[in-house]
Length: 260
Image (cartoon, rainbow, N blue to C red; front, side, top):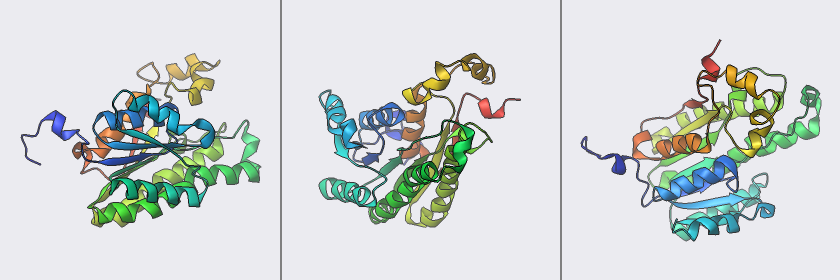
């Protein structure tokens, strides 16, 4: 790409195909919308109970190139089917945003709950491994692309409220580094994103809870993030603008992690 490239060209995703998991609500939904608005044919996936086809149809009715697909990421078979169907229908995969995740913790003692521990690792970590195993060879065969993993501020700082979630998110960041080293020679860049508190239903326990003001006071920008702050980071990483960034855990938190 020439040095005199325009901003529109630098961030354009026209001709690309993207997959976003956990995309029926919150950050995933906004990211799917933004990638499609940049020109990428976007596969919005989620649980059957979340009706991803209906969510996608709302955007498609506005002219965005989005289709919905059911996928429970805890099932390796469904993850493989999602990737296979996307590649079969559109002939390529350029960007994958592994966004699906869960937190099942109500108290610190949940650290010793094997059932919750296993479930969170299955959804938050093992599913990303399955997605990478299916998608990365296809992406490499097509010339490369961007594989982006949702991490969290909880994976950077110690905490006693959601310790297992934090463990899984730390694993996500390390997985991005490992995959970046392995697949970089094939033209694939792999990064993770570590959001702070973003105003979604997932974060309402903080944004609308009793500790709201205390958390704001610890955030230098004195406000919570919006879904487009994370979605915009994904867009950058998927575009030509982000094509020399790999192996990074990009913090989007209003400065929280650097505060004293």
